[in-house]
Image 1 (cartoon, one colour):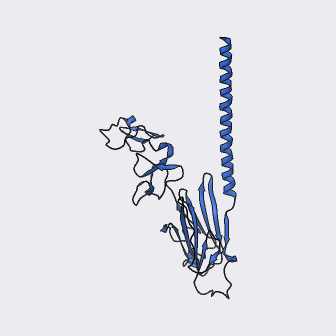
Image 2: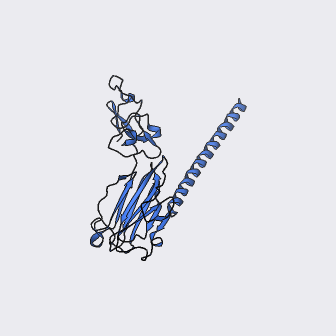
Image 3: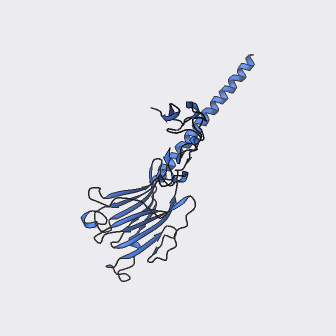
Length: 280
């Protein structure tokens, strides 16, 4: 009997040590991932200084509006429409930026293309050196299922903003769909952010069968819900009931719901009658 107790004690001690080591290993792995993400945020992306690439005044008339095209794949500049666009994969979408600085601009405009990470924004591309009265177009493939944004800065208020820059403009497209944004104005400030988002918990998405409403895609780690119409949820919640959806655990039956019926409410939701609602 004493031997059995000693054996049981040793087994429990080993299990306790194993669990403790496993927790420490998981915590260390998480800390390492967080550290790498913070390092990724602080690491500068590609910097494109257009002043190094423009032709000389002898090659080009400064008073005439010109077109200047840059592609992310070749990283070279072309002064005509004969440009080969980047080939995006199924997980990517084509970003197109058009930028025209006002004639009074003094190289003061900056554009940053950024991607959302857990602890902040990672700058993928920084573009500086926009010349006045020159139509600049930039193409780049970016990930679909993340939040991307374009940060536009007019440091001196002479390229896009205010009285000196009111003839300047820019447009942002994702897969040829133009994103709306207000015109630069002194009341708004010298900085604008245009964001291309993705759908998260119980947000509508065209990817899940929505027509003209919602985001184009679910974010990474999210899938289309089985029971919540046209919406994205975390992978672990795709079979549970979301807001205002009936569930068996709330007393719903096939008689009250002719469609698919979830077994339980999703985490963070509770029953209110036959339906799941946000827990207070």
